[in-house]
Structure formats: C-alpha cells, structure tokens
Length: 319
Image 1 (cartoon, rainbow, N blue to C red):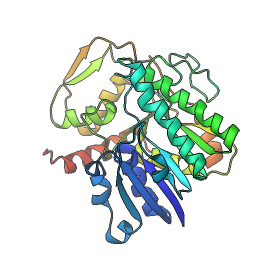
Image 2 (image 1 turned 90 degrees about the horizontal axis):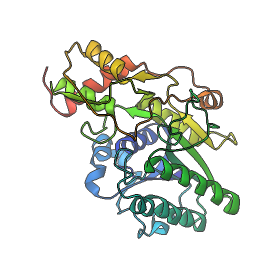
Image 3 (image 1 turned 30 degrees about the horizontal axis):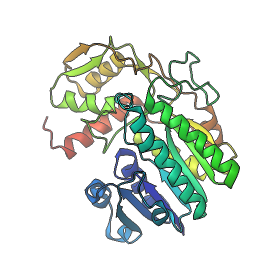
C-alpha cells in the first residue's frame, strides 16, 4: 500500500485530492494543514472505513517545520502549500520568498534525507508565463512572471530540478490553470468562477477589474484532480505539464455564461485594472493529453451548474 502525504491538504485542491485518492486508490494517507479545523471538509466527506486509512496532522508548514517528521516513510509527497496569492504577492517579496521558497527548500532536503520517492508540486499555469503572447502557452514558453507569486512558483520548479539532478529526487510539476468548483472559498482571493456564481446566487454585485476582456483558461475541479493524479501516476519521463482545458474565456463571456446557466440577472461593477493580471492566458495541454490519454473535459456551462448546486446546498442559499 502506497504512503502518501498531502501538505496543504485543507484547501480547495487538497480537499478534493484527498477524497479522490481515498475513493479510487489503495493508500495510507496523511493530510497536513495549519489547523485541524482546516481539514474538516475532508473529515466530513469520509466514511468510517476510509477514515481508518487517514492521519490528520496540524502543522504550521513554515520554515521552522520539522519536515522530517512529516515525510518519513512516505512514498509520495504532494506539495500544495502557498502562503500567498497573485494579487497580493508583490507587497512583501522578501517575506514571501522565505515563507514559500526557503520553506520548500527545507521540505526537499527532508524528502532527500527520508528517501521520498516522488514530489508532486502544484505550480501555476496562470502566472509563471507572465505577459507572453505565445498563445496557447506551451511548457517550453519562456517564463517571465509579472508577480512574485509566479516568480516563487518558477523558483521552486528550478529547486525541484536541482534536487532531482543532485539527489535523484523524482518530481512532477503541474502548471495548473484556473480551477473552480466545490469547496473553493467563494470569498477567497482566488477563484473568480466560484466567486461570481456565489455572488450571482446571493444577488450581490460582482466586481470586475478592468473592462472584462481578460481571458483565462478555467478547469472544473474534478478534471483538475483527475489530471493531477494522472500526472503523478504517469510513467513518462516528462517532468512538467500544463493542466487546463486549452480553451480561453473572457471575464465578460464568463459572466454571460453564469447569467444564462443560472437564469439570473447579474449586477456588474467595473473597477480599475490591476498590473498583476496578464491580459490573456490559455494553456496548451497537448503533452498532458498525449501522455495521459485524456479525451474530454467538463464544459464550462456544466461546471457552472454543478458548482452552483454545491454552493446552494453548502451555504444554504435559497432560490
């Protein structure tokens, strides 16, 4: 039985990943986040039998963490930790690098000492490429991030390459686009699809930065988790993958789709654009599709509907 640890498991992606691993694979799973309360969604989803194979651990996941205790006897470590987001990451770059890059270096050193077989790192397809006009963006597109969040992600990618080169620490980098769906905080700093759906259901105004022409690649969380696990299990020598849908949607068109699917009139408030937002980001996912034999992903319209149904149930939002 494979021993797997998810660091940063209490978040949106970690919660969905933990549940899928327990649902589809035979694993001993350790889920780690800063507080036990962060892990409540995982606990609430699991049945009695599944809980026998899960260890819940509270750890600050910072530069002072004793990572040897967390990764000892582990086959695979999923690194989902991030203390920042793209919109705020430029405010204190030195602190962000200590909290994320130095912390990750400490983690990787512990993984080498404890003979971890593989590290799966969740990078950012939405930020590492910066303002590149090479659309759709391939894994070979030059990386020039325009915010510290993307810079931290690409630096960690280089650290993984270094530890693989010097210590044979196997790894996979997943440059994820913009995921949305169940268990994403609707009031969080990331996740415009979930945020917009929630506000539409609550009949609250939706704030759009700029004129709504920004284009992004949105992927439903079930497809994102399928991709993450497929890449982790792949026998290919390819280390870095883009993961999205390969389709771009503008903010204005996203609003139209939400309004149409939910049959609701949406109140929009436009405000000044932000320098941290690239005007267009669409990922080329041919490597992922070819290696993992992916044929079809959920449409944006179906994903909007599934997310809305979850939000109405989880937050008790009436019609």
